[in-house]
Image (cartoon, rainbow, N blue to C red; front, side, top):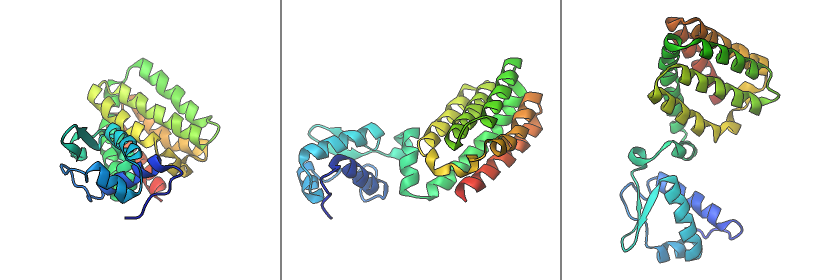
Length: 225
């Protein structure tokens, strides 16, 4: 195990520990090597190690108990949305699964939104779609696009769908810089989203599901490409 350079030691140590945990060097339920040995192995001080372990605990990867040690949590069962960017970075297969879940949830959500939308939702969706079209750059287009999807989740009338949709969106926002290309042209991005928004606004349940499938499949292809 190579020592870590000392310039950004805690940040680097967090990344190394995350990688080791997510690669199953330390499987869920296992205890990390005792702190003194672990610090020596990584070539850092115990103070730096303690700071890094606090950060991992905040992420939900580990928990430390006095007199017991630091245990790796079963993060797939006990973790939250905040872990998705880490998981995607550790294993590209996660990214495909995230997009698959996004598409399946998005299709169901769009149909429900079309069925339950109100006049207020219709007005809001039209305004938010306009904001996508007039956004100034790719980052602003992405943010505006996300607001459309939050509004669709709101229009569904389901608190569970809102939680699921917003969890995926919040995780996506942390890594959105990786997916700017499909949003480089605001007009194209808005045109791609328009059939879905209009189907929901019209109350066309079947059309909303079909256009959501098309939209999410196309954006997945563009993002992963």
